[in-house]
Length: 212
Image 1 (tube, rainbow, N blue to C red):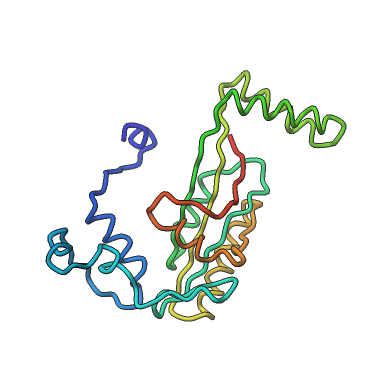
Image 2 (image 1 turned 180 degrees about the vertical axis):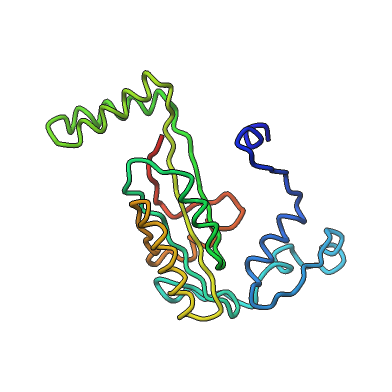
């Protein structure tokens, strides 16, 4: 909480019902129905919490988009081709006046393991043009106390029809290109992308980018 405060971001923990409400609201955009639930209802009805948040159905048959009830959705990942990212990218994405859910899955890499891996990589590509990049990264970790992370940056767009969805994805891609990045749809992984975009802490997309 203090780390968020230092960044100037207000944050507060969510209880179980609040987390369920977020899941419900994400998966039932087409109905706009309000969420009424307390844990006593589980014992009274014999239903599970999933029954209170699930949409009318999921359809993942298409390779590049999915449907939740009557809502069309698409999950893309940010292909980071620039050497560094500025938080202005995030600000511009959040200024987009369309439905957009952004998720960043971060996994810290142990510094000793990171140095060992980079030294091994450096010895393998010393004669290639990428050697200087790896050597620079190694110096940052060893002398500037930098840390390495595996980052998965996901964007989930939703709309009430396919044409509007494609237009929103196009707008999102335009913002990414301003920062020398690309938006790539998850092909045949839309279900995994949806799960990774929900507040569950699960990322099974298999797409990571190492960053400091």
